[in-house]
Image 1 (cartoon, rainbow, N blue to C red):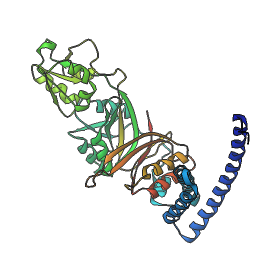
Image 2 (cartoon, one colour):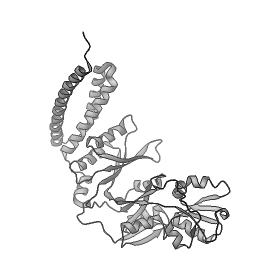
Image 3 (cartoon, rainbow, N blue to C red):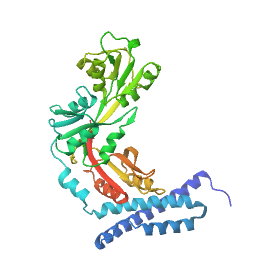
Length: 380
């Protein structure tokens, strides 16, 4: 038999694709009918025993193509579950809260009582001023203290740094979010400029200690490495505290902002930027005791954990993929007390006002061991 040409082969594939599409659409139609039947008799969307049986049969019938066939049917079943979850439209605590209590018609407030970590001049204070132009800021020693001030009602909102473009996430803040009782209602991307500041008259050769927050130190790693071992590098609560410390101690310099130079009477010791990248940004989140979803919200954050089994994380991600939603961030955090098991942080580009998104979140929650909705918000 004469082998087919490439064009003939592609024509045959096109014909098969048409048949596959027809069969897939019919299967999804039947999945919709199954969803309605499950809803009427109170049965859950997920039927793990049936899925395992289908995959076993697929493997037995696929021979050398078993690996590929199993993956195909896993994807088909993931799409079916997602579609059934949306059609079932079962009201849960999450969907009820979003629809009845979280959605706001008014604009994001310009005035509020706001909790920040640090002192006057900290980058958190700069972020808070941009988020709340008429806000009343209270300062706290630690990120935990900021979270507690918001949870207790002492402050309406809190502003916390969550990640830096060159040095990564602020893990302590994600651990605070994992504890619960806080929701993200807005975020801000703030450009960061670090300077090496010291008392007037100080030369770089006079400096014996440089102090700053660990994130700022990490963002200036190349410059600090070039100074050699003669200079001690110390960490402190934040860059504003570092500036105040440098103002009080001779021979000490601080990695801090130009704002702090003016506040604490310091001067820069170099003409050039000391940070590793000129494109240096930190994301700050604004948290409240409960979610508040304002017009324009286009980013959703949540925490989820999955069973420690092969393919489980892929199965969760496929729920998002089924809705053609862009994943902006996924990061793992260890779960205390469970060896090498992780909670995952998800940021996705979506709004709960869009059709199907609440259903997608419900499906994600049903398929997760644990799930925490952190909020739907806008980044400015």
